[in-house]
Length: 554
Image 1 (cartoon, rainbow, N blue to C red):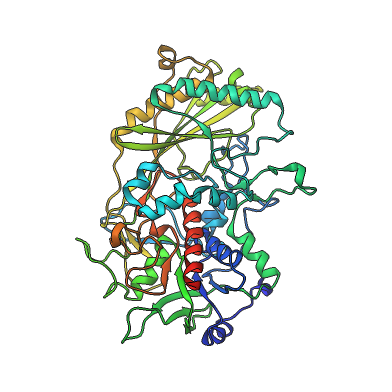
Image 2: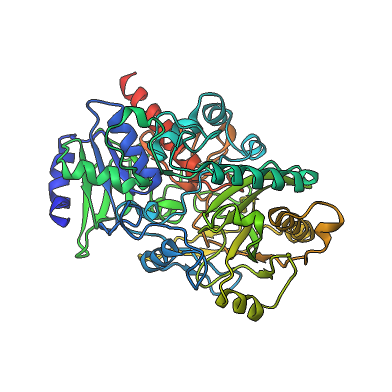
């Protein structure tokens, strides 16, 4: 594979010197990868240089590889292949020795970035979070102009897909009994949680399972799970001259001239041998897509705070505001009764929003399914073991029943709550290739624990076939566990967008005070939303591509 990615810094520098490229993107994850794809597919002439700190790895999100698959029969529980690969690939991140919570995440430096190892869950951000934090132009694009559906169509490889109906409804291979079983289960669940205001629907996932128009396709090979690496490699293999991928190259700084601080004129890179070189930008627009830790690290090393950033009470906002949403959860392991048996042990992933006080909470339920929400090999959520009658039993007794031939279902419940940015959390401007962060504070949602427990009990009872009211109270009140900061790589906020020029970037993701420098990754989020941010990031990348292309022709 490396022979297809043979461009060197010298090759690229020579092309840059005479203005060959229109766009230089630093980072190839979901932000940078979707942006590159959107630029090239919506322009016949645009040329993109894509700089990636790492190289190619075997993608976990292809149809016949070790993809995130669902098998609750694995002794360790639901399959965690993606988590295993993520932990093997992620780079170290340091935290300050004092006044910091631990951080369990990490950057993934490879072609496709963390888009190789994500959980595929693609919900929309709650409207209240959008209204409170995002610029009006962005909200209008996402909600009124179809931005969310457009992004989902890309991620699911289906031009007809809609988030309201995320799965093809004409799949004749699914039996009527399974369809009826799922429908009955969902009806029981919504009835059993109606006092909480729940309305559960199927989880949208960034994958193509089957063709939505089978009558129009002779060959039907589903794409499987989405990763930006698929499109990138397809272009590379076909020697597309409009896309150059420069792998194994770290961007140290973006540079301005001493007499003109309004534009980036060159970038300083270092290759795998440690050799530093400056690459002239020429006419190109530069977009940082290095992630919540990588992009502010480049900006801080470049001294971008001076003269081009609006002031806040805590000073320059670059690198500040680092935040991850709160994830709490529990799981039931149940000896199958008739209600759960109607699924025939197949996976089911469903979700609903619920309000606890003033906080919108995303409730994610995975039945017999892998989930990346708040659970890793090292950090498992608390479990309750139930008999077919939904009586709590010791784990040893539960396992003995399995040995005798009983079948189990695994029901995992994860709650995600949004968290505002806090400027005390930050990326430090220190020398060296390893980022250092300080997480001084995290959002405290412990006041919701009793409600989270009672809702989990109501969900368990409804899935097991119990009616509401007193029958629900026969179930044990489950413990809920809190996931550590960074566990699912959703940290955001260090290059935030703001309303009315109050952020690091504006509504078009351009850094305030600079003509040709943009940011397109999770660092631009002005809040850590309860929802997985990947769908919104893909939508922002598509919106940015449209803005850049329209600006180039105006």
